[in-house]
Structures are given as C-alpha cells and as structure tokens.
Image (cartoon, rainbow, N blue to C red; front, side):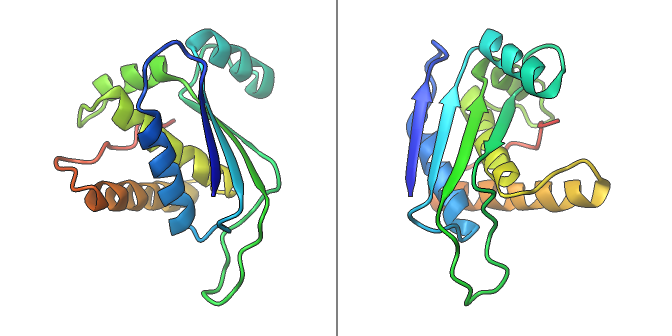
Length: 165
C-alpha cells in the first residue's frame, strides 16, 4: 500500500498514526495492496477554501475526500480486489481539536484525526451518510475499524465517538 501523508498545516500531528490507521482501514476493507492513497493535513484557511470550492459551504470542515479511481471493496471473499489510485483525504487539525474537545467522550486531536482518516477512507470507497441506513452502516464500519486498530495496539479507554458531520 502506498500512502503518503503530507502535513501542510503548521500543526504538529501524529503522522505515523494517520499512516498506520489508513493502512489498517484499507487492509480491513480488502483494498489491493498496490493501491495508492494521499492524506494531506491543512490549516483552517486552506480547508475553508476547499469547502467553499467543492461543497459551496462556508467555513472549514473536518475532512474531505476526493476519490480518483472509485475503487470499491470486493463483494466476495474470493474476488480479487482492483488496484488503483484511491484519491486524496484532506484533514484539518484545528477542526479536529475542537471536535475532540466537544465530543461526548472527549479525546485528543490526534484521536480525532485517526477517526477522520477512517471516515475519509470510507468515503473514498463509496460509503456515505446522507440517509439513516447509510449513516448506520458507515458509522458502524468506522467504529469497528477504529476499535480494531486501537485493540491491535493495546490502546485503552473508549474509542472516539463519531463526531463527523
């Protein structure tokens, strides 16, 4: 799996954790090991510009996903996953910090960025949360991936609750 993490935000973030959880999520979703992903960490001003340009919504947001090859997880266990460019995930640590503090189970900015990374991966794979059934599926999968990753690392305490809009 080729995953690039580029921090352009000016904020110190745990880039290794972002890389690790992205790799874990893609492996768990059975994405081809030669697929490529880019994660970019930006400041609030850059995120706001992207949010306006692509969503026509004001203010910065937490995560945005820009799919490339529209890869999907294989539907059958014996199906060979396609290889390709997944796309870009853009994260904003300033928004992540605020959301982590406001969450029901308060958590750190880095924990929120890990959650947002998984959220972005799932969007790249075609998952959405516009409808209640889609939201239940996506957020359930997101929680399972974050919980699995945390358990593998022996991390204790509650996993971050979904704070993604």
